[in-house]
Length: 515
Image (cartoon, rainbow, N blue to C red):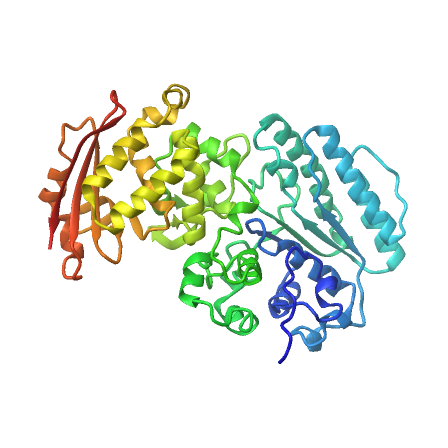
């Protein structure tokens, strides 16, 4: 029996994965060959843990001419291995929380490149001036144009979004550094920058406006991430016996306007853990800043699974005016459901990419919405039992207890609890955190259902009203929302839930069963 190849968990170095061919590797080199032969300056944004660092490491090994590492891969027979190029690699792996630390980090990165390339430069306070001299001296020493690879180009900003003044300083440090690349065009063979977020070109790339952004280029949609074909071939032995439909539901769904892809980190950990379904990717980074932004903006949570944004909004954002929509997309909590052409404009409808992100995100945000800690899991279990057994009186009792248990201080100190969408957001977050099949603002020919839940045993259609005088169920009846789901052989429950903002709880819970 052939031994399984090792899983490259946490390994971001191409050489380590390929040195003895002991590790599993998904061959992306055909796309890499297309990339390097069709252009010279590129930018790629992808969420964290999506294989960006491995891609940068692969490019470095390729331009350095390390043919032995590419044995058997798609690019080996078509690449010119007789020419080697010196590589300057800038990787912001460290954390810098003030201007001094940022400048020290840039200096350390440039010194590391000098040592590896055998170059000595004059150390100056300006990273850009320093990098320019490094590029020119490297070209002169090696007699070849220089390849510049930047991994996590945005880390000085992203790490400091919670302190805007420092983030702005980080922007200036990076602008000084990156403007040098365009100024050194005659010495540069190829440049590739990658990171999590795309900031407006005016603010960061003002001096590097010749970058080709391939973040939403369908040709490179699968450059990072695993495809369904990758799972069925490269991962076939590791996934033997797995419920592939469930794997797809949990971890697939990231859409960069081409074939949808899986997050590599999820698949590697899923295989390594004995095929246990867990929130592997989400657990590696708590989006604290993101949750605070949701609180500040009083976001109606159900809309997150059907946001519609313009092409210009999703394209980038500015740290002086941070918008939630592009941040959620660029960090991987939302993805593109579909692209829409509206006249001359392009819009995107966003959604959660898969079950992992939807349930994990909503589970996490619940703590901020309700202030509940221990009680949260108890209510989640109760809600699940209530719905799977169609015990509607118990469901009402659970919801009343849930809202009664929200600490008073949470209402006083949290502005999100003062707007109408708060109550529906809490219920939606509880339901989404259970991984249930649900749709917010479910479109019918008669209008939109606030929330529809589809279970094996029943279908629930829920309408919410705040200070509405007990008219939620009446609206469902009048608009005949149930027509969409009739004929499926399941009982349909119409539920109208009314809230009183003064009482901070349900004032009415009316329901009826059809079929």
